[in-house]
Image 1 (cartoon, rainbow, N blue to C red):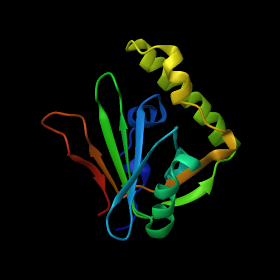
Image 2: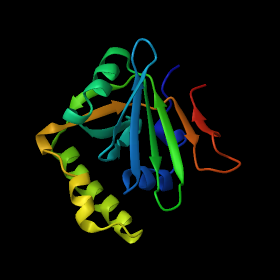
Image 3: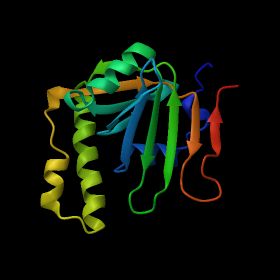
Length: 166
């Protein structure tokens, strides 16, 4: 299935959503279809329909990164904790890259934004400090061009496809 241009289904509101302070879970699978997953530390939508870059901590994501390097399959869910508004992206061409300076800055801003959102829901700031700790040189990127996008917000439209390759 060929990738679809990001602009074909991801309007500016969705871009703000997935690049903002939402929960990110990144998943793949091994050759036996056993799932692996990891927490995301930010997402960047690239200009010119070049796909997305999701940041993960390498030492926390070794199995996930191995499976992505081996098979290229990826699914990412972006969920707003307070409302459960959610979007899922799927790809088949995922690759692992080192994080660059822009990625590291984005991860820092993402962790601050997600932390603010959780504090607004009543979580203690001290509790969140450890939740977002990582070494900047341990950040890795899962880069891919989505082939499918689904609404995952609970309700009657959950699972509805909002974009896919022809």
